[in-house]
Image (cartoon, rainbow, N blue to C red; front, side, top):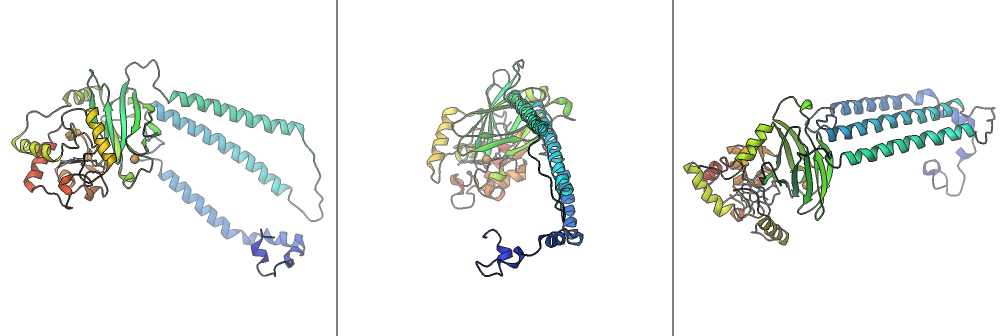
Length: 403
Ligand code: HEC
Ligand SMILES: [Cu+2]
């Protein structure tokens, strides 16, 4: 009774409503009268067109999963396409048969339906087909999972990078970027084209997720646990080098989660090598930059490294003081050694140039309302920056010489 509140609304509780006793055939005919269906059909048709347009609109873009530029993303796209179309075929087949049965054998006045008990060939068919489908797709998916898990074993020239998620930026540490050189950088991962890149994913605080849609599917970055993935940018799929691929954190990780972006910059082997060679303290500095260097040492070096890869012990102590909280403390911060070679600041939020740097130093919150620089650096204790314009200009000159 309780299942039909609308029918019963006007009838007193416990009294059967008249609809239960009316002639069922009469009410059936009324409900399939064509005039009642037209507006619904128009709405559904309109919605379908709208969804179609929306989906078509998604097909190109900086973070489109429909455009795969490497073996890992390709495999994932292939899995998706095959699964999708097999499921569409199953859906259309099953729903089609069902609709056929519903319409063809619907109740008609005066017709008594025949009673059927079992049909062996039919039952065998609809057991075997799904079994083959599920097993086939299942085994193929598991094989694909192994393929996209590690770089192919015959690949001997793999670059290994530790990637750490921080609130709200990404840290990239090359264990050996080339010639045994260790490199730490942030928010922009530079890779040579056609080389396999193995990524070890970590997090220093909460769970983040690493995702560059055109290169590989997303994978969580979990504190105290290492997740591994790999990708390769395929030169045959890229028109011009250097090419930039856009990524972002794909796991809600706090207030500025949506502002936690990164880029993968694919370079020719020669450009990559020269970036690796040039990575290090800038020499020589202009006079203005020299003044900026002093300002930096006093105000910024508590958190930022500028003269090479981060020292693991120093990073550990920054992380400890981040975890301990408090107002004026060191916290993990992007390594700025190669800052001027990057395209953006603020984890992919703004192009890197003297204006955006000025705005960032004067008040990081203008660009990223919640961030751990304006939250913890002592130069922002009274809201505004306590540096003079001259000091800020020196800093900018210095930062733009960091390579
Ligand atoms: C208390 C630690 C701390 C201090 C001190 C500090 N920063 Fe930062 N800085 C951070 C953190 C954390 C970020 C990352 C913010 C984000 O993107 O969410 C950052 C980001 C930056 C960035 C952007 C880097 C990028 O790749 O996106 C620049 C540039 C920068 N800081 C410059 C400075 C300068 C110049 C000073 C000194 C005037 C300074 N910082 C002082 C913690 C600090
Ligand atoms: Cu995140």
